Image (cartoon, rainbow, N blue to C red; front, side):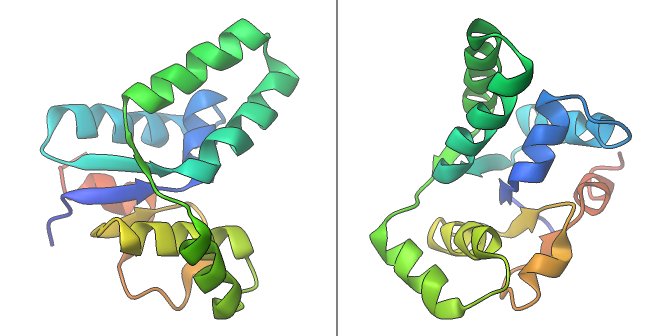
Length: 140
């Protein structure tokens, strides 16, 4: 199956930004592949403030903004609005953040979600892929 538009979960973004081993290499490769191939990468709007909060604990404000700018330039932003939040509440999933990611991906017409924690997306109507599964389609 070909995935042309994918949403990347917060955990994978953090793997890349914080260079978390052993996950960083695959996370960074996702960003490389989506620059080279006809794949649109989306990051959910609410992910940026979460990432900023986590990064600023370890980095200076300047470095934190630099990393946020890099993430933003490598992706499009998927919408999170009142209807998405309301739908996420009604799903009653154990992981509310995953419900928001899922609905943001659905409303953005994504073909898949890339995450290291697929268990949070058990009731997804779109494919949920690990970083390795996503990269496999490109021979990486």
